[in-house]
Length: 204
Image (cartoon, rainbow, N blue to C red; front, side, top):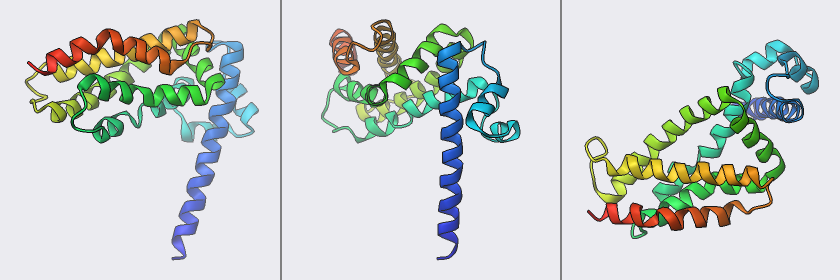
């Protein structure tokens, strides 16, 4: 009973420091550009030491990638929780909406991060690596939904890849519109295009 509050307090303190570092870094990166910002500037803006920074992040890239990783955290859980009778296209559309709705809920910050990623080759490469992990998780979940073997059937990985390609297209269009277009509407439009391929292939 006496340990839990201490653990909870430590976790909250750690999260607060992480959030402060992330917020300071993203503001600087958005204003000055990725290559122009140093770690010294980030820690000064956040009011912490460089040693503290490296307890949370290995590099500038990791600050952005961690923010993006959180966008994908709930996708597999969302897919697992979708009704079993839903067509794959519907389940995957709702799955992709999870990080996109998060973007819409924090539009200014999310738009800055998306632009950084799309405009910075090193970040884009890291983001695509992260998406490969998302694809594998979604593919295995989808294989369970449609009753195929994820290790031998091509459909789950192709379907997950198509869904994430739609996700990328929505992010690109949202960024190009300066945030004026609604991510949810863009997602619906994207899945209207790919739904026949997702659902027809699942029935074969």
